Image 1 (tube, rainbow, N blue to C red):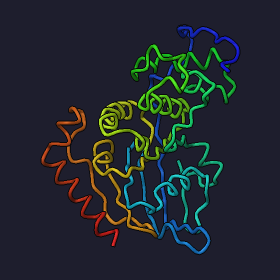
Image 2: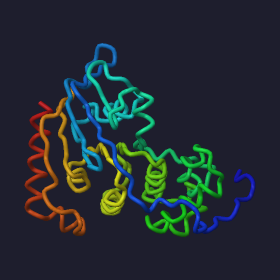
Image 3: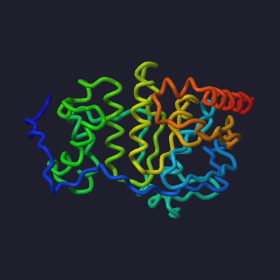
Image 4: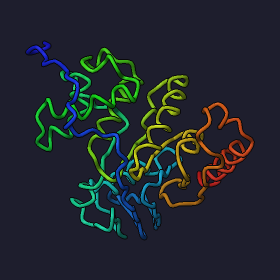
Length: 275
């Protein structure tokens, strides 16, 4: 059932807060981090520092603990050993307060319109539905969703659902964003289009971003640098900087010989780390 009629989506007034400004990012630091699930060691002696506003990618073999790493940073898990801080804060609830976490599945609420799914964070902070919608509305046009504000998730394509999920993450207004394989469920063509879209969105966000991907090409295209993890128990075995500027169209970037060489170095590190 669709429930009560929707209130109209109104244009924000001039006094409404919008999300067009860049926010300051948070420094993320991991020192000697280890994690076990019972007798199984998942992460071993991991050291990583991510500067404020930096976009860092994490790649590694399947089962290497990439998603677990995001949960540790977000404060959803505590490491078995070592320390993790977000903007210098180490307690789990402090880390969680500083992070917006986008899991692999979009987890949109099927009974809510797209704009209400995107604006859940402002509502949770006490904003009225009208105020929350006013925060989200300008971003629907900016991110290619204009005209779909009142569509339910079942009426959206996979790429549109992921955009709404990203807007929900962005509107959480946190200094760190943790993205767990955001496009893993999409077909190759849609995934390429979404990567180009997200590259532009991340450049304008200002937040510190930690992005997990199973796709080396995606990570190199989207991120300032990419950290390669070994097979479980995972530890960092290689680090690569983005080889070329990402302002060019995606097809030009990934065809650049410097990008191709970086991708091969990352793949070689993955092969060696999987042995």
